[in-house]
Length: 263
Image 1 (cartoon, rainbow, N blue to C red):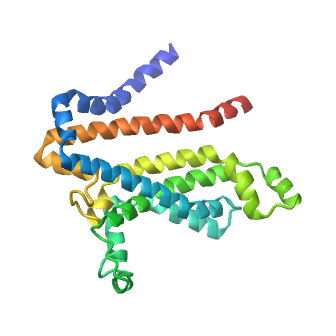
Image 2 (cartoon, rainbow, N blue to C red; image 1 turned 90 degrees about the vertical axis):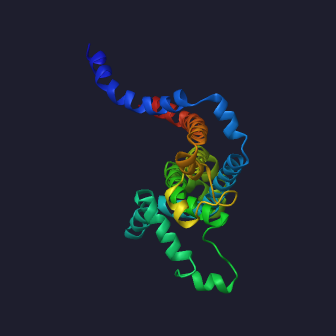
Image 3 (cartoon, one colour; image 1 turned 180 degrees about the vertical axis):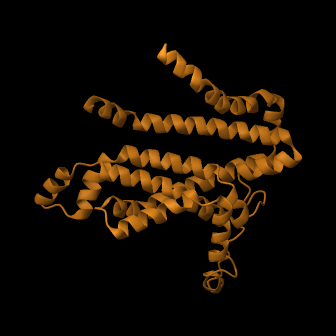
């Protein structure tokens, strides 16, 4: 009886989660769906979203892995400060993130003069889309990687050090292989977050078809001009999200199974 009571109490919120997603597919006309996906502007938005989100993941791995390595180290004031700094983009309103990026890399921004001297114009370009996505999404990879590194038994690293391995060899041959599941899940979550990024992108990169218009921005325009396109791209992003969650749960399943065995 108690279990049935909890199920009934949980039902309203579960319906609240399910009904909006279900409504997208119920209102979607499949003829409009295929017609929208055959439009060049829609295909450009899909291609640009996939390209920039993959570039964001690669950039997050390249620049975020050293940060994750620092975060997993023994706690100190500096590491706590770094941890707060990494968390900050995930709690900032996206509009604030977009304005901040514009004030840093825009023509009149802090680095605008130096970039102009180098002949670089970042705002309202595809590169701006990647930077906006990286600013918002990379912390997901960093936090996941740091947790993966912290979960590795210290005795393994000490044994490798006693055998003569240096820090790079320990990282390369012990930490990376043992933390591959958190690293993979962090990459997947970062890709999904980058794929759905809207607020910072529209302010820092604009909404130019074929250059900066990603799927969320195309949905925004479609909502004002063509609801069929908005629903079609929304359905695509919902499907991507379901696949991403499935991949993350698959990647974390071995670790969860080990935790259950330990308990």
